[in-house]
Length: 267
Image (cartoon, rainbow, N blue to C red; front, side, top):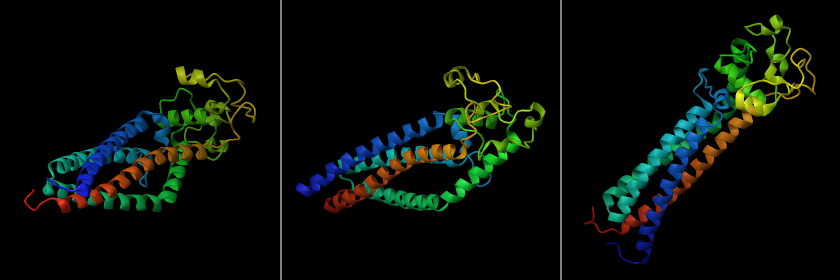
């Protein structure tokens, strides 16, 4: 058994840190699950990567934080067992795993920061392409993108990606067929009724054919609102990741101090 004030302090501090690891890991899992289930239609609009598939910005980051959090919980078990048993073998494995994880996290963070601007451009281009090809302007649309964009326009009280002119010349050609300038989701409407029953109750029935700044949301583009939503989700993930990295660094320091104090015959 280790003797002395500092080794004993290092041992129990390491146990406490690994308990915090478990808490942080569980928080990451809960956060990831909440991100997936909270307003999934809005998250859908941010799920695009360089290939144009809908498995990108939010979904990939969310799954990564869930998997990473589960791994952190596993590491914490190694750390607690190693500290409690004062096992150089377990502590050595623990330190090695943490170092590898730390390197991967730093590299991933650097790449995410490097490609941030590119990702924003790709998301915007993808949204505009989808509006042209996959948006039919129907309030009762069966298209996933249409449902997601309608929800975003109601939620954020906005219209179009850049502006309401994005709806011209769509593949469905609904603006010409219906004489509507904007979809009903761009109108000022009863939001509680929409959320509860998915029903569009507009304040002015002429808003789709004669939109104004009063009866519709044509003054507010949606892209900035959607981007802010994506950034907000990303910030939550970054905060959890930063806390985990900080705990990892401190845990490595205390584990190294403890392993030096354990007798050579302790394995």
